[in-house]
Amino acid sequence: MEAAPLLEVENLSVDVFGERGVGRAVDGISFTVRRGEALGLIGESGSGKSLTCLTVMRLNPSPSTRVAGGMLRLDGNDLLRLGEDEMRSYRGRRIAMVLQDPMAALNPVFRIGDQIGEALALHRGLRGAGQEKVALELLGRLRVPDPARTLRSFPHQLSGGMRQRVVSAIALAGQPELLIADEPTTALDVTVQAAYLGLLRQLQRESSLAVLFVTHDLGAIARVCDRVAVMYGGRIVEVADVGTVFRAPSHPYTQALLRSMPDVTRRSDRLDPIPGQPPSVFARKQGCPFAPRCGEAMPRCVEEMPPERSAGPGQVVRCWARGAA
Ligand SMILES: Nc1ncnc2c1ncn2[C@@H]1O[C@H](COP(=O)(O)OP(=O)(O)OP(=O)(O)O)[C@@H](O)[C@H]1O
Ligand SMILES: [Mg+2]
Image (cartoon, rainbow, N blue to C red; front, side):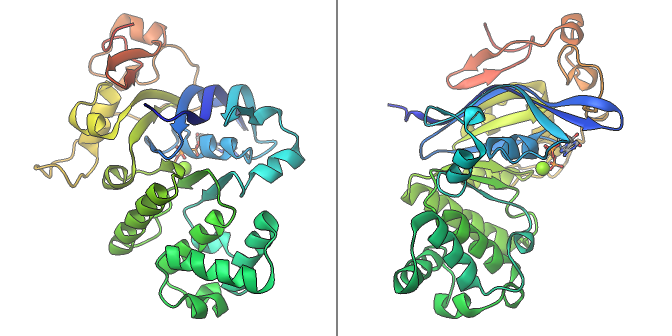
């Protein structure tokens, strides 16, 4: 039996305000993350991935962005209706986030032990010897060599990979059910990335952690994720199991994206960049956002956004040329 959804995002829209007016950067997206599963979120730069993540934490910048509609539920609780105090009690304890730059998440003037300790005190009321014991355990779970010494270190004394493990330890300090990781390995070099991703997958499986994982890296998706959602122009155009996405991508955009990205599983090294540009968030919205760049576009595609259609078991696609209603 499939696990119950932990996070349910339903028809979520987020507007951004800029010099050119209002744009809908997240445009009616729906997806779920089940307990203990890792969902990958993939798509070109500007497609709305980070804004989606921030909005789930209700940390989307204000007043430059605003939720325009839809629902966000965690374990059945409507996050958009929580007061700020209640939402604060969810952050860290139920939903935590790891971002691209670990240095930005750490305070340069405090020792690692103080920073992990602060999270343990805040989320779990742990202090003194009990706190230190759990901090050491957390670093151990993140395979940090010499945890005791690391607790006494300052952020600048650690390597980039170790910093990201420390940031992850802080994120996991409150024993969250959902971890949002927005390009957590982009700032790390390749071998360190691989080690971190392996670790993330292991932690996720050990503690049935649900993960929403944003990346540009298909290899990372293959390593970490169970399912993948593909975003384009603020919309989710395809959701499928990770194996299906690689073997039988359905949406013309997903297919083009796979051809445009380097991939460990592919025999040929040739990359085909997608011609044209992604749409501006401020452009007038009508039809499928990918239609202007799509080799299969029909007149209907520029007029009307297709609804979700089924393209196979567990595979949902929004394309008039694919799937069945
Ligand atoms: N605070 C903001 N104010 C105005 N516009 C914003 C703001 N945050 C995001 N946007 C716009 O919303 C769109 C989506 O941005 P987002 O950061 O979610 O993209 P992304 O998919 O994460 O891209 P990348 O892969 O480059 O990280 C972009 O057009 C961006 O310029
Ligand atoms: Mg981003």
